[in-house]
Length: 268
Ligand SMILES: C[S@@+](CC[C@H](N)C(=O)[O-])C[C@H]1O[C@@H](n2cnc3c(N)ncnc32)[C@H](O)[C@@H]1O
Image 1 (cartoon, rainbow, N blue to C red):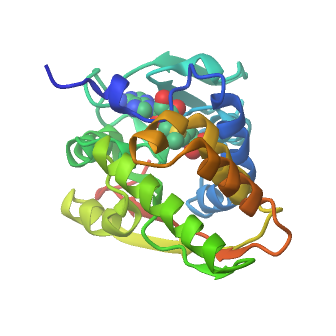
Image 2: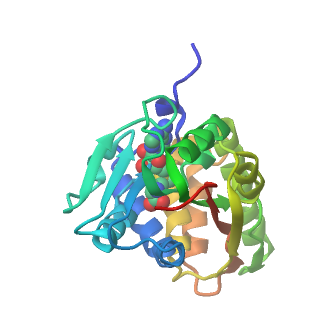
């Protein structure tokens, strides 16, 4: 029997490491994500769907923004880490399989969810159908195939960093992810019938202080078994952590794409 998505998804919310993963994700990307949601017009009275809400930081932000007249449905296959918040309806829900209402939402948002799902194109169709005519879909997704080393302490450190990034690409691909989904999402959203496609790439300089670097350092623990399956040793993973904490470490981040599109038809 093929593994279910729940077993294939690499970052398990029930892992002891998930709290830190969500914390680093929020610190690294919530300012970008929420600025984009504000640009889309998310505001008082809106009915929103936050898919794969994880630690719930974006869902909470949305609930405060649209309340008290608006509401946010926050879903996840493992929703236990989404905090209670007035105006937030928390649901255990598999976006691949479970029923989803049609023409219900002014805004649908998902960050770093479809990237992991082999069924991402079918899921995208479902998200489009869940929008009211005139509603907005925002997908925030990585392309982890770009992210060059800039300054490393020595050539061996550069090789180690590149080995680590390549192993991460392999392990995620093996689990069904599209590691370049961020760059593929705009065309997929247009093919799904959305209009006014607005893709925005974001790159950062990564240093030892960057939340994005804390996130990838944390992967060496959260995904330790998968890295070992890809041929990395515990010694190498410890050396990666030391490299990422080195004050001289400089790299270009992977690319985060925030892509918006609108369902055709009159708003309101
Ligand atoms: C990388 S985390 C991102 C969490 C959050 N969106 C963020 O950016 O902070 C992906 C989330 O998607 C959830 N997820 C994975 N497969 C899912 C599915 N089939 N349906 C709903 N949620 C899913 C995971 O449990 C996890 O919380």
